[in-house]
Image (tube, rainbow, N blue to C red; front, side, top):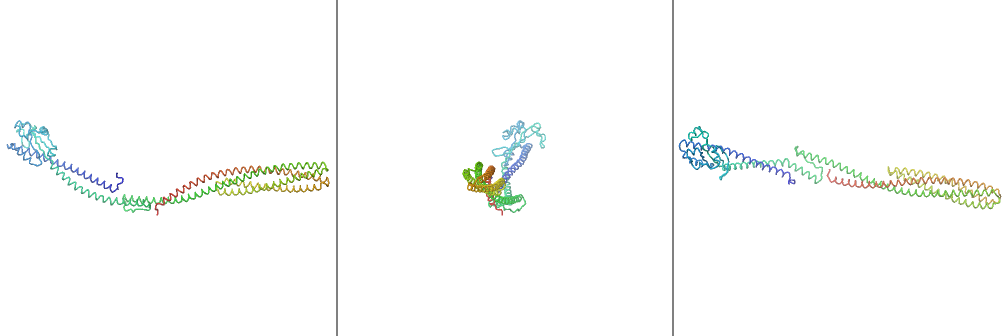
Length: 536
C-alpha cells in the first residue's frame, strides 16, 4: 500500500503516528498515575475522616451526648464528597443499648464483612458514580486513645463492637483528574507538535533535500542518458557517502560504457573485415571449383586424345608390320627371278601405295603429336594458373598447389616426349620420302637390269629395318600414352578431390559469412545502443 508513497510522506506518517502514540501513552500513563495518586490521597483522607467521625462519637459517648450522634452524621454528610457515613452496630452493642437508629443497621454484605472484623477499602459503582467505600471495624480495646472500651461495652478485648462505614464520591476528583490530563495532554501535544515540526524541518533539510537532489540527478541522468552527471558532495554523512557512491558508480559506468563503445567499434570493424574475408573466401572457393571443373574437363579431353593416340599408334604398328611383310615378299621375288621385273614393278607400285599410306599415317602421327604438344602446353598453363590461385587461397589451397605443380611437371615431360617423337617421325618422313624416290628410280630403271633389282632388294631390307624401328617407336608411343593416361586419371581424381574441398570451403565460407553478418548486425546494434548514452 505504501510502495508508491514518497519517503517524505512515509516519514511524516511515521512521525505523526509516533506523535499520536506518545501522546496517547503519555495521557494514559498520566491518567493512571494521577488516578492512583488521587485514590491514595482520598483513601488517606477517608480513613482520617472515618477516624475523626468515630473519635467524635466516642467523645459524645463520654460526654453523654450520644443521642445527638445523628446530628453529627448529617453534619458529616454536608461534605459534597461524602455520600454516606454511618456506624454499624454490632450484636454486643445491640444487646446492651438496643438496636439503635435505622442508619446503624446492617444493610449489605459490606456491613457484615466489616462486623466480621474485615477492614475494606474498595471502589464501587453506585448511582452517584464511582465511590470509594471504607469500612473500619471497631475493636474493643482497654486503651483506645485513652478510653477503655471493654468496660463501657462489657466486652472482651479484641471483640468487634461495630464498624464505621464511609462512602466517598470520586466523581468530582475524576473530573479534576480528567481536566488535568486534558491540560497536560494539550501542553504535551503542543510540545510534541513543535518537536514534530522541528524534526520534520531537520529531516527535510538534512535528509530529504539531499535525497531529492540525488533523485533529481538520477532522473536527469536516466532521462538524458547522460552518464557524465555528477553531484556535488556537500557533507560527509550517510547522504554524502551515498552521493559519493553515486558519483563513483557513474564514473565507473562512464568508464565501462566508454570501454564498451571502443570494443563495439572494434568489433564492428572486425566483423566488417570478417564479412569481407568470408565473401572473398567464398568467391575464391567458387572460382576454384569452376577452374577445377574446367581442368577436369580438359583432362577428360586429354584422356580421350591419349586413347586416340594409343589406338592410332597400334594401327601404325600393324601397318608397319604389314609393310615389312610386303617388303620381304618383294625381296624374295627379286632374289627368285630377275625376269619378274614387271611383277616387281607392280609390287613396287603396291609398295608405293603402302608408302603413301605410311606417309599419311606418319602425318597423322605428326598431327596427333601436335595436339599432344598443344594439350601439354595448355595443361602447363592451367597448372600454372591453378598454382597461382592455390597460392591466393592460402592454407586451404596448399594441397591443390602441390597437385597443380605435379600436373605442370607431367605436362612438361609430355611436351619433351612429344618433341622427341616429332623428331623421330620427321626422320621417318624423310626416310619415306627417300623410299618414294628410290621406288620411282626402281620403276624407271627396272628395265635396265637385274642389278637394279638386287639394289632394290637391299633397299627393301633397309625399309624392313626402318619399319621395325617404327614399330618400336609406336610401342614406345603406346606405352607413354598408357602412362600419360594413368597420370591424367590420377590428376583427374585429385582435381575432383580439390573440387570437393572447394565445395566444403564454399559451405564453410557461406556459414562464416552468415555468422559474420549476424556478428556485424549485433555489433552495430550494440554500438547504436551505447551511443544513446552521453559520454562526453
